[in-house]
Amino acid sequence: MLQNFSKAEILPTFLENGEEAPMKFWPVPDSYRKNLPHSGNPGSFWENRGDRNHCGIDIYAPRKSAVLAIDSGMVVEVGIFTSPEAVPYWNVTCYVLIRHEDGLVAKYAELEEAVVREGDIAAAGDVIGYVGSVLNPEKITESSPPYVRLLKGNGHSSMLHFELYRGLPLPPCNYLGGNSFDSLKPSNILDPTAYLEGLQPKKLS
Image (cartoon, rainbow, N blue to C red):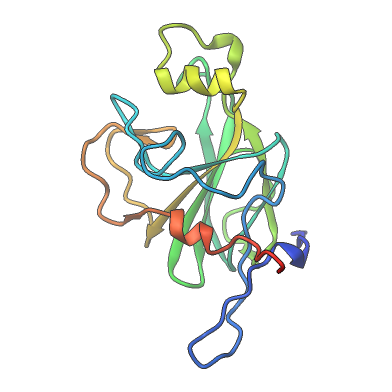
């Protein structure tokens, strides 16, 4: 059974007629912080990682932190996201793809565990999985990509990798572990930064 998280993590939004819009949730209530990496910074959308570009936003949090559905929607896919069979310094993580009621499709990735299945209906605020530790520090060497060595140095091996699409994802042909090895962005991929920032809880005056 899906779990609901505290309403304290909601940012109320309002429609043009003044009515309260459906509530949406910040996806990782226990994230280390809620200010997101902006363009060019590590973990930001379309960050240039040398031979690849980052297709989402990384939200750092302790391993096994609850991950929430930001909005209501249908789970359209659950699968393996990373594994050591693909890249030696990866741990096994999974992803959940949800088509939300606003028409956007979100990929919640680098999860240690998904607690939903394809076809499930998730309400806004339902727990859909738990943050995983994507990197195995013991397998990271001097030949690993610089951004991976930096993550190891910062102690950032556990995170939610979040991607946002207009419609079902059209990942590039050369896509692996949340990165595109193509220079051009997929036509329907969106920068989730502003969208996620709108979900941060309001500060009380």
